[in-house]
Image (cartoon, rainbow, N blue to C red; front, top):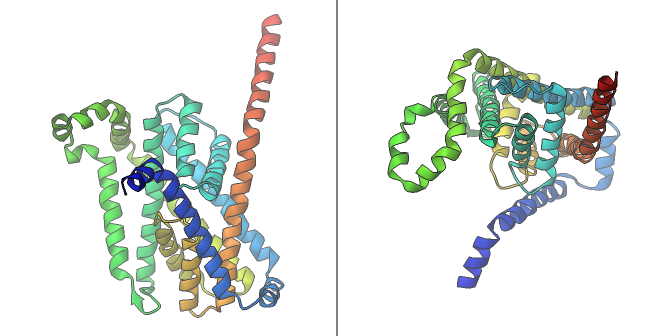
Length: 343
């Protein structure tokens, strides 16, 4: 028994990663097996897919990647970090690769944190704090759309009321958001002094604390960040709506104002890789509850999944070639500097 416990502690990360991979694969396999009658029925639906609607859906996905980079840049500038939107967009794409293909729910954010810290020569704590604020603004955006959906009359899934869970989630988001911007309100200083372990961490965490504290001075930037988050969430809503239209699903746009935030919240449960499997099955469950045919709902979820995988593949390619491209540009800049000196 002791050997088993030791082995688990030593390999805890690998075990949990393996379990997440297993959960994602199992959920996708379960969706395909239970929602499609046979290969012929799937081919029949695929023949009816509208390519123009599908292209429009993909374009909103691309817009979402760009707006993510713009939102991130606005927050970075508050800490005197000036990096081009092009570079940040490439980093976001690489983040998708890490989220979709590596066994971690936060792999993409870890890479983004490290990449910008290295590029700007800033502490990891500062970069991580900005990612936390950026991500949290996205969660608030999703929660806000969920509340809007309640006012639009979407209050239940399959006869099960979701009013209380959404209100609780929205309230918790607001409280956590207030604490992130006002970390001093917790008065952790006294607690840190009493516990030696926390005292040692104090210096390491000071950058994170100070970064959070500094956002109080940038209220307009935070408002702008929230606006970007609302735009990003609406782009995701359009992405889902247009993909559904491509397959002939005639749910209204307002219906997806309800579907997308709920699916986003469910996919945050950290039991799979980047929400893979959870997201697709929850899309099918909600759509079927709203009267959509099982096969069409399943195909819609798989098309949206394919878009994420495709973006992840592009991110992987960028991750592979970017060092070579960067080295080429560096050599060219050095050559130009030498030429200018000679002249």
